[in-house]
Amino acid sequence: MRIIRTSKLTVLVSLAATLALISCQDAESERRMKVLRQLASSMPRYSDFRQVTSFDNYKTGQAIILLGYSSQAAWDDVKGFYSQTLLTKGWSVVPDEERYAIFFKEEEFEVVFRNGEYQIGIKLARENGRGYKFLITYCWERPLFFR
Image 1 (cartoon, rainbow, N blue to C red):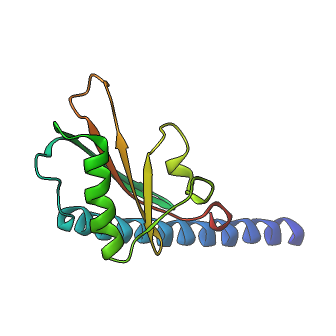
Image 2 (image 1 turned 45 degrees about the vertical axis):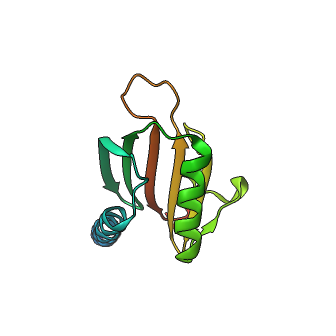
């Protein structure tokens, strides 16, 4: 009888600790989302960019904002504008092999920048039927070994 009670108590304590940890992680993701929103709203836009779509989401260990822009600009002009803007603000270009999971899952991003725990990916969307030519993604993602 004592073993069953101890076992139940251990399960309840473990469950409570897990729920508390998840709650803290969700709060961290929500806080990171606020930082991403501020970053996205303060980021200069290329001269003829017109935002046509947006998406944001956060979950445990991850926060993301995607903004789609229509434009007549050439990729090299847009890449040059954002490279100059971000590099002068302390961001660095991220090599492919060092990109967090979100930037090598489904879509290939032509250039990704990192500043601390945050990344910005810029992609030429080509013909996608969604009305945007360029996609800028703002991301915070906890490395996999911390999840």
